[in-house]
Image (cartoon, rainbow, N blue to C red; front, top):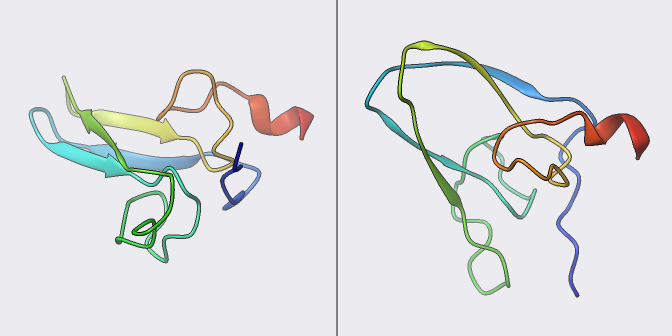
Length: 79
């Protein structure tokens, strides 16, 4: 199985707005981390849609290995 590129071994804090959709980069190759810029095209990865239920800061996974994708679960600490 193909593994995603580790964009960084830390989460990306992002202030999200309630009701807004965000598309998290799952391949790790986007130049606009943590969000998709289309770099995955032609590969096995697709972006993951995240819809904010409230306005607050969330932590998007940067290592691409979280079991709670697209949000960080601390997996990067063991990589």
